[in-house]
Structures are given as C-alpha cells and as structure tokens.
Amino acid sequence: MFGISIGIALSLGAAIFYVARRRRDAPLIDVTPTIGNLSSLGKNESPLAIANRGSSSAREVVVSMRIRNSLFEFDEIPALAPSASQPLTWNERAGRFKLEAIGIGANWLRTAVRSAVLDAHGELRIPISVHYRDDSGTERTSFQVLHCDEQLRIRVTES
Image (tube, rainbow, N blue to C red; front, side):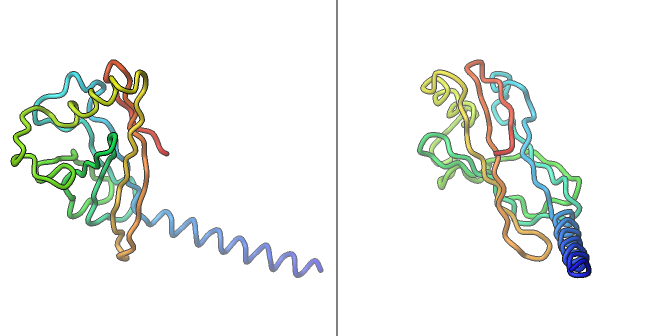
C-alpha cells in the first residue's frame, strides 16, 4: 500500500514538472497601455503595445477587441521574439474594412472608446483577444480586458 502511494506521488510529480516546463517554453503575450490617458493620444499614435514575456517566439499575432457591436483588429505581427515589445498599429485595417477607404482622420480607437464610455456612464470594459501560433505551430488564444473610465484613463487586466 505504501509503495503504491509513492509510485502515484512520483508519477504525479513528473506530470506536474512536465506541464510546468512545457508552459514555461510557450510564449506569454501581454497587451499593455503605452499612455495613461486617451486624451493625450496623438492622431497616429497607438495607445497599446504588445509584449512577449515568454521564452519562445510567437508568430502570426493578431489582437482584436470588441467595442459595442464592432470588432476591431490591429495589424498582424508576423513574428514576436521573446522579450520583445512593439506598438499595435492599425494601418491596414480596423474591423474588416480599410481605414483609408472610409476617410477616418482622427485616432479611431479614441473616438470609438469615447463614444462608448459616454454611453456606459462609468467604467467601460473592452474584451481583448490575442491569437497567435507558438514555435510548434499550435494556435493559442489569450484574453485580457481594457478598462477605460469617464476621464479616458486606461489600464489592461487579465480576464
């Protein structure tokens, strides 16, 4: 009886070690704000950046967020190396249309968030999803939440 318990404990320990080691090798993608307040955002500045805190690279990274009934997608990042960070851009598209085609002159994110915050009458929570592939080709998704208050101060938390 005692020998069986030791065997189960050793196999359970090996399984936990394998899972922990495997998780440590995966990319850890985070979206972070680059500014504290959307009011100070310039015309073509990005208020958000993406960082890889993991020990392996991420490929085909796409960040999207849903504001009201609209889905906004930032430009795809072909590869994000470990410990690398870069701002999220939207030069190619936001949603499923080209921004140049509809003639948006101001920062579309600030405009969309400002109108949604006014309707929310308090803190607005915007879901963010990050889709990417790891080194082994496995497609992964992580979720975060962008919080914005009535003064347009922003922060990002894990969901």
